[in-house]
Length: 349
Length: 178
Image 1 (spheres, rainbow over the protein chains, first blue to last red):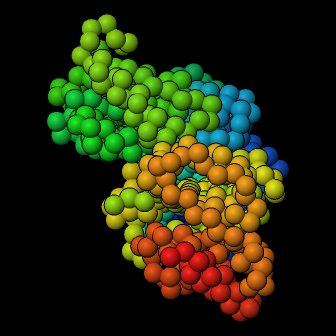
Image 2 (cartoon, rainbow over the protein chains, first blue to last red):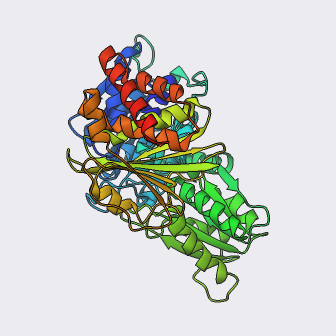
Image 3 (tube, each protein chain N blue to C red):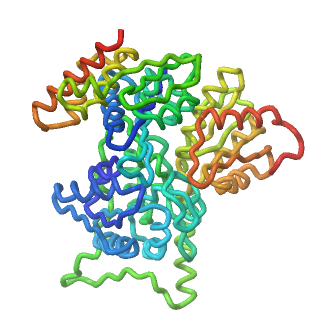
């Protein structure tokens, strides 16, 4: 609901989706509210694949467009997402992750990190991935996703989970920025002017190579400029938990408990999962030597943390995949165990 | 200050409704609040619960390890949450249809015959509102009028008679406990 309202306020005027738990609230909200705004279009498509390609069409015509789904549905959309990236078209894709692989279950999980941050579909591309950890951020980051998608003409993904999709918190909508997107990118009928073509099929290898490098240069700019993270309780921390989204909320609860027993634990929360906040995390390793990665998966962001820290710190992992959401107390026990063993040689790298 | 409450019962007893209205009331009373419903492939008559955290500072985690309050509308709720509730916590039980009682000695249990009370008022379906009345008496924090305003905002333009029944059910629950 929040994402839907934020999207409409951000000027999204095309939404296509196909139902799947746990994100149906968003599709339902769009079905009711898209028609209330001028030029707003809602389509319940015949499939996830149809929805993403409708978004591609809307985006090519210059409309702010969005689709949403949950893990298995997002897998189906990868063909379209790859296409959007190839054609340099902006779009926002929401993934409320659930347990996987396969159909898995409908409980909150974080198993789609690799899929989201490594491009997801085929070919040499990346998507901007934003990971909200509160209702306020669901709203704020949705608006930001549209702006980033436009600015870099690239698909942007909101990566949250079933828990973020179901919870409620008081939220204030920020004012949406006016859209800054050149009409020259839009296909709206050439009239008597020169015809424009948007295409993802580039047959001559040399031409394709040049296109790949052009995209790579764009991704480099995004990596340099757009990383975001939250630092929580890092002053004098002896152990830093790296977690995003729901796992980060649980971590904050655990940190408060641990603080009461005198354990100095901090949280580093990536808000952009791609680009991953490598520099900030690496700088942190000059001060702290013990890191614990916590994910509701078997360890995916763990790889990015290893790449960022490059062996300069101890890295351990705690995972709860499959749709399990541990309580802060349960996680606090895991952190406490970790805290006792910190600074010991030969821990998992 | 951080107070976590779990509302639990059969689907259809209105536990999500009182949890949501309670969260809304707390928001209007000026608190930080999170509302987290349980969800799954639920069916009517199955079990449902939600967690509401209320605090005067930012709420770290919407998942409650040890709730201070549990509103249990049926037997499975008592059985499930008796081990989760914090020491010195309070469990309010809808005793009209619940035989189970917690084995804990370190928590306080209040038995509220919510079904009978609601029936006396003329709407047996209002037992959930009786329970929230009793909860607010114990939890304080939210002025009854603030809560009732939230309840009426959320129920929207439903019949006046329903709003009146809810007010009476709330008052009966509120007055039932000292």
